[in-house]
Length: 208
Image (tube, rainbow, N blue to C red; front, side):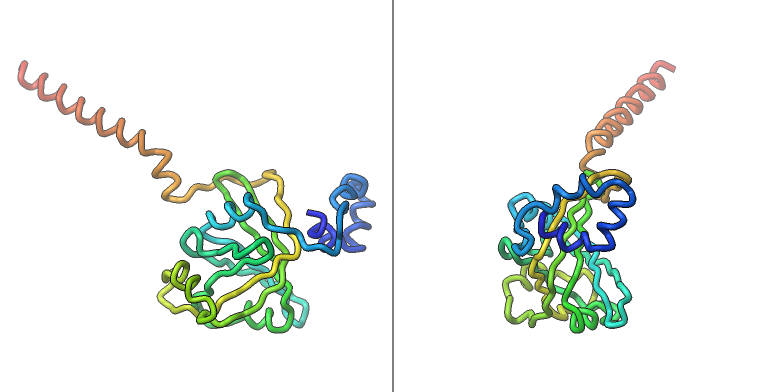
């Protein structure tokens, strides 16, 4: 996380940390080579490729931040190597705010959330818009329509820093598939109980 901390802990941030008494504790996060980008390991790759969506932050030339949600089937964000992420961007409302911001400032922030397990991964990087034809394999694997548009371009992100965040204040939320798996045995039990109930009613009716 050292590179992430060096990017995030600006002079003003450090001043606030001093004022609020957390500067000493935060100093340990600054240890290491500030010039070397953080690397994506096996844990990060597995986490990212299991997500069906993430939040993408960019900044306009006027300085205003912009956040957008990007979603798709699990695995639509690919970890190409220890330094690079990529995903096929499918046409949406055609405002192109994210794309325009990246054209002026390639710095981006990606926020991956696993609500069910209260886990989050933050990533700083530099984004580049590429022609999907350059990576036909990725388009084939992750270009499944998540809207009724088409693959607009490929967004390639060179990772600069990353940080796992604490689970504090994350409210657990579950997808339909996660709930279905968890409640499968409950449904099976309900079916058995309903069957037993019908059999008992049938027996009672026969006794009458």
